[in-house]
Structure formats: structure tokens, C-alpha cells
Length: 68
Image 1 (cartoon, helix red, strand yellow):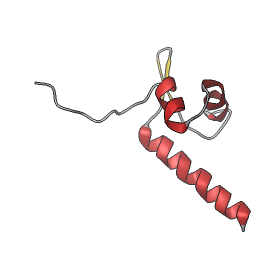
Image 2 (cartoon, rainbow, N blue to C red):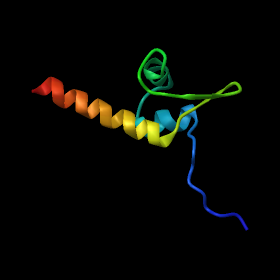
Image 3 (tube, rainbow, N blue to C red):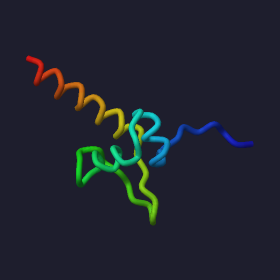
Image 4 (cartoon, one colour):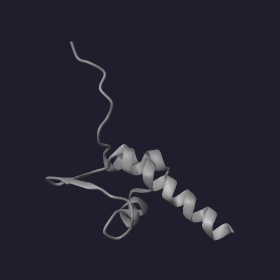
């Protein structure tokens, strides 16, 4: 019996799709080029859903600061 576990890490394709970005744009905003943290696992680059959500919140806060 396999439990329905939450996804702990997302692939590049999944993260790009979730953010509605191209893979190239995702690469540009990924640390160290940008501010979105990623995790290297061997040759794969993976993203924590929590880090993605936190990044979105930071982007919203920055937009609100610049709008004022």
C-alpha cells in the first residue's frame, strides 16, 4: 500500500509550468543568477514548492513596495 505523499521537490518542467514561465526564464531567475533557490541532486535541478511559494510572496511584496 502506497500512501499519497505530497511532492517534496518539483522538476524544472513542473516548476516552469506552475509559474507559467519558459524553462529559459526559470533558469534566469534561479539562484545564483536570480533569487529563486534550487537544489542540485546529481545532474538534476529541483525546486522546493515551499521555496517557490516564498519566492512568489517576495515578488508580490517587491511589486507593492515599488507601487507606493
